[in-house]
Image (cartoon, rainbow, N blue to C red; front, side):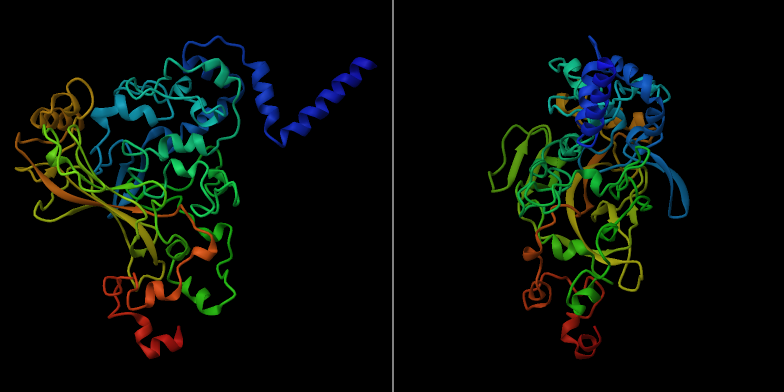
Length: 458
């Protein structure tokens, strides 16, 4: 009788802890024994109970890095594996390094087995210790100094650290790529992000990126131009959330982010321009404020507290596909929002516009997928001709042997760093004599408020 009572009390305690997430950690601590020499050995233990979860995640773009979608009426398979950007250009020939942010182990080349569930990295999303790190020099294997058993015994629901390990540091460093995602967002001040601040709503990422069967909605425009998985603020907020009717009418044509994210990169400067053409030099350039020079990368320009660029956005995007012809005399857009003033699905939305100058084939007029990483990569050899030849061969694109540098621009949605309502834009921020809205670029003759008829009816 006494033994039965003890078991019952233990069961009740387990159920009570389940709501806090402590039960899963305690259970894993007792169940996971080890020792482990690799991440795959941990995954094999996870699969004893979670094989279905592994199959779910293997069907997501987090695993495949591509999915089938329709672009300009053509069905293509597009994703991180074959998109081209104005940061490190493209991933295929640089996989040993890029796959540090893949949710698997050992994706070094085409021989990687995507059908093998033991290749799935469970710990990268479920570590609760903050001590888990993958290797950027060894195809995403676990770094040698990590106590794998300790991490495996302390797993739980994903937190901001798990997501941020990749998404805060995309493009090669903190705040480089996104502008609204950086390390300040792990525990942001209330004034930086009201949703994620411990002094605000203290959301985990999946509070908005609500996940089902390991499918995480939301993706950047360069890899998901069809807009699949896009969601908006009405997931939680009313479509007419304001007490003032005029403000509510704005929500028909203006996204919530436009007014409630007055600036991005509010804590950490974000990269706004990457000029690859100066890379390989021996002398540092002028130490202009916000400008850095690295021999491996060229001239890098950073800015803080940046006012967004505004454009109409209907949830879909245009993209440059590898191998498409360019006009090197003008900037080529690699990803940009679709929509205009007459599009009923479009709203004015804030963006970061990252510009660059990157290598292209001067005979074929196509961008080069440069090989930058490794002993034969540009970061080691500083030989653009070799880096171009190796990179283009890896992607099956023609290469003439002649190269130059052409301007590019890439648009990134701004959705994070939502400020408290008292910091939201006010009327004169957009409509005043010094208003920030580019009215003519948005399709208006001028500020709509200068038109009495429009002002009366809106």
